[in-house]
Image (cartoon, rainbow, N blue to C red; front, side, top):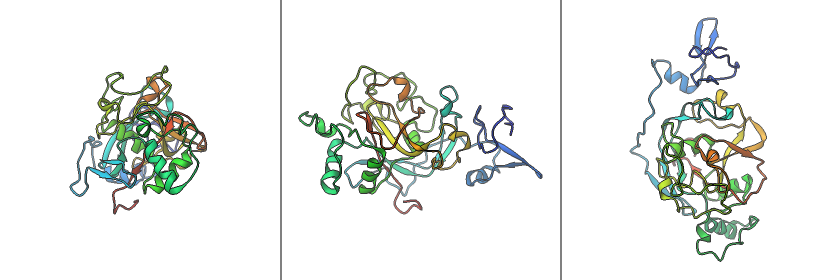
Length: 299
């Protein structure tokens, strides 16, 4: 299949051009027919793709408090630009994605919250969990050393779930094509806790100037964050344009986002995709949770 916008050849299963991100059209006996999915059907009557914008719904609070005491931030339904055209192949293409409304934790899950979970639910303490417990800010440090499976178990206990990769990215970058949660300005110490010379995480609310457009903290640096999705290097070109989540990728790996202390700024870009085995533990792996609005079809 050839892209009608840039002429690049794409695989038949692709919905978006791998080179330019344009929506692809399949050649059928009756002429040019858009690939059929729910979003395509809505867009067939439009001459051009809609511009992303933030429309705050009247029926949903912009913040909520969850079972584990986290402050949840509303990310309202709508389009946003996901991916990039100029970096790693697995981040391409940059294309418009539509997500339904959801809430996401303001910060990663903390040691204090995870300790409460262990007290009430039981389970294995992460390696090094009590190592710095004497520190004055230990309770507000992001919990680390948690596997993907343990993060999912915590999320279920808190009546939430892990965010999809698309949800994570929209919460981090908003509706434009910014490089970082705070904009296109290169990271500074007041923005994020990252750099190859750092050896430990910082408190989850330490970098107020690094807030995302929706108010989320720590979405660049500090700790890598587990997402729902299986990892697939070529998922983006074939992903559905509405609420994408990779469930048929490489089942051995799960996606991690956001970069961490001890890593370069390049890995903390909002579009950068990391991955690892779901049973892997690391002193720089943490997570935050998401939840659907009450009464939604998927809540």
